[in-house]
Length: 237
Image (cartoon, rainbow, N blue to C red; front, side, top):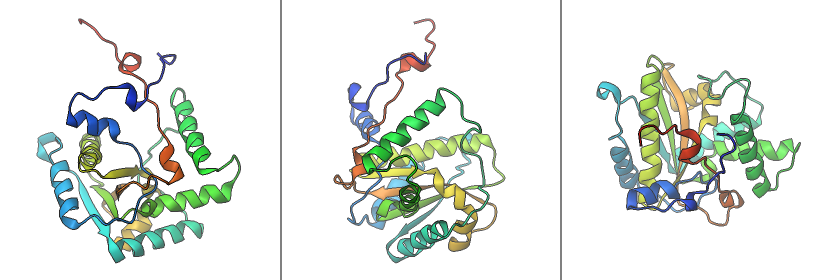
């Protein structure tokens, strides 16, 4: 199955508006300063909260930041990183060590992204600046900090993933773009301190929300996907 040719989003024809929103969703890493008002963000989150969850537990919690609150938060977080701050993350996102085929996919998207940004191998200063750009929500006008109670279990994390997907798809349907960023989990303690959050709040991720800057180099990146034939064992059809 690893030899299956990859496909791009435009290799699949959308047959309705929902599929068009899904297929046009991608990680946007540069945003225009165009504001997104609270009513739009609140509506988006209300729609996203229709995600399924086991016994209707609804495990998601969000801190939505904009304006001066967002600017103060992201600059403090980026400064902490650039000063060399390190802390234990709340959860392990990636396997350690990586293994195939996941290692090759990770390397490809990383070097493809850095290629668009003009970052070469070993250019650690530029790589650090890119991480800081992540922590600034890529200059998006809205930043979401997504939280989950530490006492909840794997099932609730699965449910949360569907909530996060809803945010991405519903945003596209409204002409907005997103980037979901697990890097925020690496600074969970700092984030809890900056936002005055309890220790039981696990920082799952950050989400940048706004309008894509079409001229930002990183936004030229188009990622590939394995088609269904490469990851599905069809039986009885």
